[in-house]
Structures are given as C-alpha cells and as structure tokens.
Length: 124
Image (cartoon, rainbow, N blue to C red):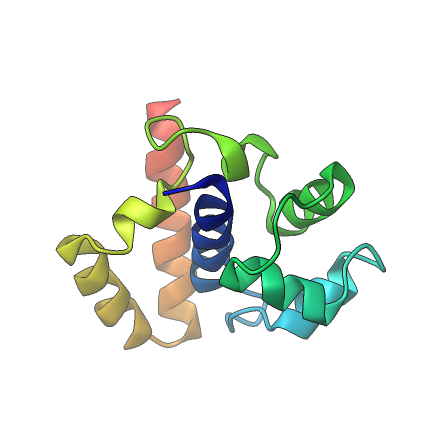
C-alpha cells in the first residue's frame, strides 16, 4: 500500500474507533471544527478517500492532536504503526469485534474503550 493509501486507511480507522464524549463517532464537521481552521471539510474528505496527496505537517499535526495520536501514527510502517489500520480492516477478529461493539450502548462502548486503553498501557 502506498503512503497515500496508508494515510487514508489510518485516518479511516481513527474515525471508526474514536468517539466524542457522548459516545458517538466524530463527524467530518466535528474534526474540521476541532482542527480550528487548519483543514476544510472537502480537503478532509479527500484525505479520507486517498484523493489528496502529501498533506502538510500542519494538517497532519492538527489531525494527530484532534484524535490524540502521535504524528508517527500516520507514517510509521505497519510493524510500528499504532493501529496497523490497513492490515486490521481485513482481520476477521477485528470485524467480529466491530460488529459486537456496534451492538453496545454508549456506556458499554466507553467500558470497552477504557479496557483497550488499559491493555495497551500494560504493553508499554
């Protein structure tokens, strides 16, 4: 997968796994507003679909800050990427987890996200 596809896949994964305080997924407008003028809705759509190439460091930093990840998340090789998003999207276990996660209410989703954070911190 080329760098543009990797960036788009990882950005897609962030939209799928990150939630607002109320437990709902972020909309494109939420992200645009949270990046405070650094990115437009059209440009964000282009990044998400792989139509935009080579985002500026300012845009990458704004997205990383918004989602609470390091800038390296978007560019690290699969073995070093925080989520390895493009590999995980086709993983049957990830698909099963996503299906079960989608059946939970907001409280249940928060519990699962906290458990995942806890397990990740144990590895560190």
